[in-house]
Length: 318
Image 1 (tube, rainbow, N blue to C red):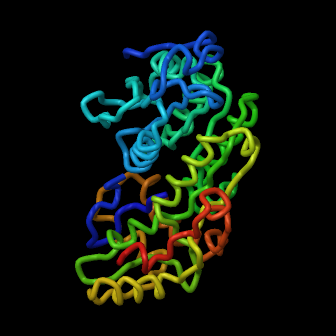
Image 2: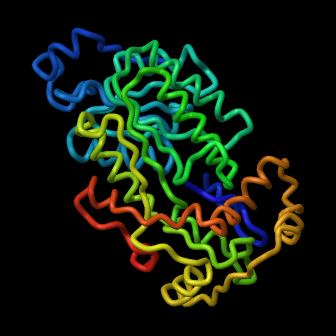
């Protein structure tokens, strides 16, 4: 999960033709479609959404490297990764009919959460409803650590609403609740070397995006044992922003520090971005959620799913 832009920092949001296989493909498997086809025996058709993005792209590349066929959902065919054994479907989360076609015949589907917008919950509902109509067996959804109706981090409420929609749909599901992305921490540093936000001495177990991708691949390869499960995907330790700043300093050689803003300061320092109120609330509540202890959970789920320990921040940045 990424946090929004911070004062003086670079923008950290640096956030159909479909071959329908259907029942016959599920029954015949590779005997008909051959090794490397989008149909994979024992899993049904694996579908990866957001395949032109960072997380979806990582997952797609790992599946392709393992010789597993897949269907990739992208909004722009020109940005789709060119991977062996992959077919391409073009669909936007705002396009229910295109989504249904893209998901038709899908067995296990990675549903990467949509870009942060005011109507993201509706877009997610479109995806879930399309999955039901298309006969998808299991959704693997990238949610957020501490997702709840009353979460301090405002966007975690969107994830909770999406989880509830999936639960009510009757689909099989696995929820991967990601912590803040450790990869984006350097982009939260302003030109003055400060990370600013009202986090106090709160802690967050930031997670490497590569670990999330590894976990998603593990579930997609063998979804049945993970049906109905929710996994908190975190780093190996919960750190304060002061500690994170010290690690960035030690690894990169750039002097970085944390400035604990008041709420008033936090809103004022973000006013120059001209962002809508809902987005500024999301940026600020990233930090207040940390202050409230909502991101301090340290889980062993990364190692449980992938067989390797979660990546420490210092190792990631090295």
